[in-house]
Amino acid sequence: MTRKTWLFIGASGRIGRMLMAHWRQEPPKGMRIVAQSRHSQETDVLVWSPLGGANALLAWIDHHGPVDGMFVFSGVTPAPLAKLSDNATLAEACLSAAHVANIPTVLLATSSAVYGAGNGTAMRETAPLQPANDYGRAKVAAEAVCAGWRANGTDVTCLRIGNVIGADALLLNAENASVASPLRLDVFADGHGPRRSYIGPATLARVLAKLASSEQLPESLNIAAPMPVTMQSLISEVKVPWVGTAAPATAHQNITLDCSLLANFFSFVPSASDPKTMIAEWQGLKDQE
Image 1 (cartoon, rainbow, N blue to C red):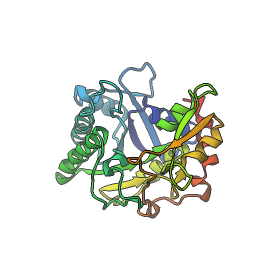
Image 2: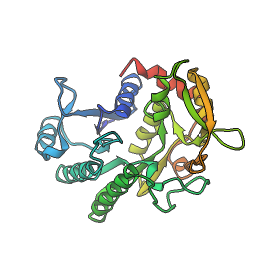
Image 3: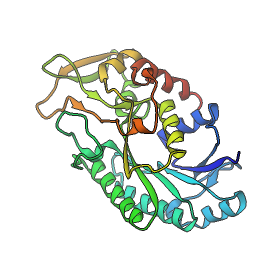
Image 4: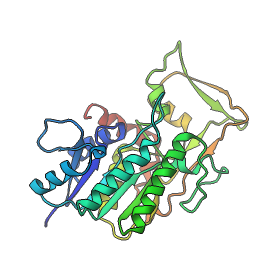
């Protein structure tokens, strides 16, 4: 059986490194996933800067053969002086290059941040896009770029990804927590903390491989484990010092995704929503990145 070739754009990012590490350990059946980097000496890497045009991509295809699909995880995350508008620019560059290179399918990572905080109930793909910050607005702009290319015949699905274990602010901050400087977590009137939609990196890798082999994907798709988790449950698994503080009136306890549409394409094992399993997935990949 001929393997399908998929490019992974953004392989050097925080999520990309974990995904590529998993795929090295557990190569998807019937697929070859090629990492993209702007600078690399490795022979099995696509060296290409999307903002520089499609020529390097076309040259790679001329040498290595046609490409069946492209994962686009290249983007700009919130940080001081970050140019968040580049999220739409990168989406445009990648989709334009895919069109020129005759790559038929693109799965482009946006974010659950496109929904904003919601109303406390799990948000479906049909929920209104009401981003609450500049990052969410930048991802909405990237989705608008996708809509334009979709209207021109490109098969592109926007992946509205929730929190990925090991690439989220909570666990990144937890790595720096200490007895002298414990992690602080909002606690609400019911005595519980925030509840969010998460997914382990190994599970995310398996989801992406399955979606790449699926037919007739929707225009947008929520990506997270089926059941949301509390942040306290994650912190208890990494065993770092933390203290609860009264949640301000502006805080939102439940910001979660409804992933019933995703269930039509991927069958989750029950442990995929278990905090212990999620943390173990991350810890198993940390040294392999």
